[in-house]
Length: 383
Image (cartoon, rainbow, N blue to C red; front, side, top):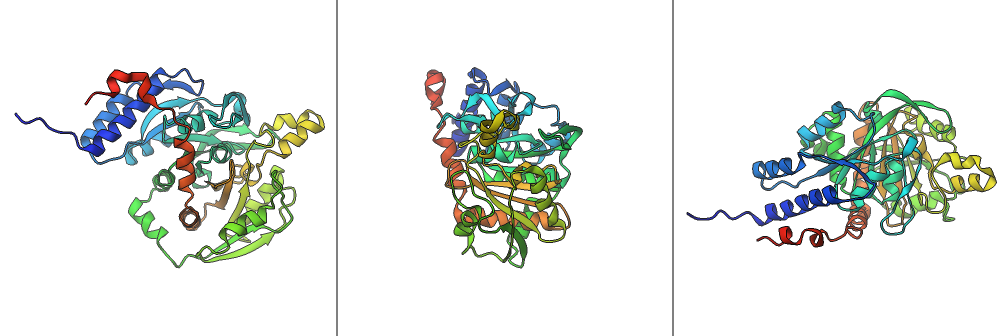
């Protein structure tokens, strides 16, 4: 009887996914709250049913605001496999004092700190997280990953929460990933459109967008660069039909000011584009530190967070796109009206392709992954 040989691609996927499962099960990292006991069987089952598929391992932020109705479509339609329950910072504050970036050692940006840490560590590919005041987009940029806040699609929590400065809001739900394709899968699934229809819309060359950006001199980033120059220096020659609308962004680090700029998407322009960061490298993202005198206030003012702090409060759709600069990248917001979300996704898709942004997220992830083979030598070397 001839022995059946496993296809090489399937074998490589099996090795990668099972290695991540074993590492998650044996890890002592505080980034992991628990591991899905059924993940092993689900990995084997999916590869048996779809030998050419790529396994997408999913983390879920440890919060009661993420419900089955948020996760089920991603599992059933995208085929994502839930692996880890990820640590969230206590009281969902903006800085995690127990987790540190695996390369440069700075405290992880919160509150979705465990999710980003697990992606950077190679345990998961994508994580479902929540956002009250920037807890999806800020940690994503901090880790040079992609972020997507789906609040503008009506994907939100049932209970009310409060921002650190007293605004009442329902948390947005979204994803963080090293893969731009995973972000688009989540968008299509939660938008209830097929990936074929999404691809057709993204290839439509007749899209025209009015995009608001800060005028020169209105926002100076913590590294001393002008936000206007960071945007135009990168996108001025991108082949995309855009009408740039410049606006004064002075004091945009104040949440109420940021909210007013995003809310104007309903009338004055179609989307708001900012360049934010470095996230929590020159300062700290925990707003409560601002109450600790002038030094505390200076630290929070230098945290590199601007419009992303007000996306959920504005009921907006938000994207974070990493750049070649550490902890920095583009943030795009729009309101979920008519066909604007798909138009803005196409803008983001063009930026990702034009600047090859996925190269940075992949490099950031795999340059921090430990070699798992040493942990299970006998198992790994089976032929």
